Length: 247
Image (cartoon, rainbow, N blue to C red):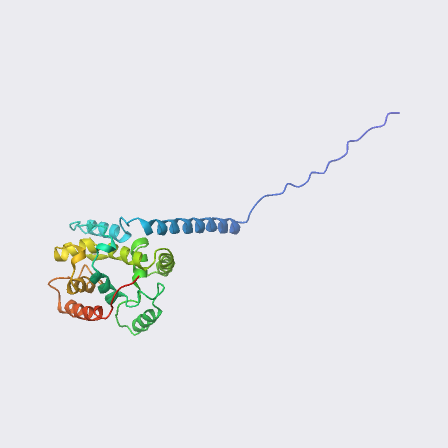
């Protein structure tokens, strides 16, 4: 009598699902984006330690603002090495914008605290931003008062203080900031306001440029208002006490 052989039942092993949660995928994407941001931002900071900054976000914004308003588009910007920029102008912006520039590490917390307290009272004074912070904002960021922009400003300020140093920060600052309507940097400003080169500015002329920095499209360095003339006098007085600049 033949015996019937029944095949053994094979139990299928459950296939492991290689599935990541949505949250972990998002975290991975954010981590990659953050690493890319750090890499690119540090690369640009290192690059601009040696290479002149060709243009800034503000220059682009002003271009489109004037174009949208139907205004004449005027743009003047030429890079000038700091050795060819008058020491008087360097002293003037320190006197006007950041009295502790040579000694702080990028931030003047006392000035920031004073600005915060004054703003709480509803009074308007200059902000607590240092030359380092203004440089970081002008070169790498957009204008605005959001927490995101202020956070990025602090990040880039730390980077340029660590990688550039004070002399390079001052050089980039004096070549990048707005010093008139469509006028950017010391070379263009001295040519625009005084018809001379940046190396030959007198104390009063340098103070005239520094005095209009809070709003260079509104104020004039020459034929100035009484407000700007008072600022010039104050700046010159402070400049006399600065002494030799050692970066």
